[in-house]
Length: 146
Image (tube, rainbow, N blue to C red):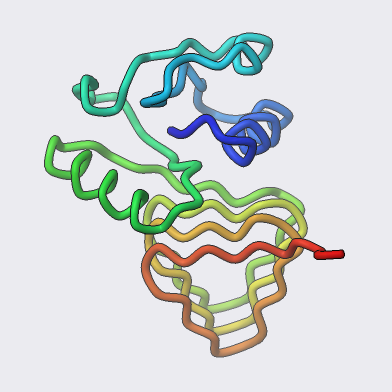
């Protein structure tokens, strides 16, 4: 859900993997984006017009935390389910607890005894040392600024 540049990066990452589920489409209130068609994802419509089915699971590609919170509240109220994704190049230490609906991108490292709150996003190349706790809806981005 979400068709920003980050959403497209997330889709590319997921499409490259051998997943045990099928990506069918995306929801976006600003309308369809052609970049998604080459990944065979169907524009499913606007979030407010979507009614989750029993087999639908969502992953949020929304960087704006307040918007992510509102969408989770809206979709949860309609019975939506969320899935989590951890990129295979990421390393998760021992005794790490992970919430639902999280995205851990490529080359992340979570040390032992960490906690990642539900609906958090760790984009890529994020290093979290031992005994760190991230709250709900956290967003960690390792961008270089020049």
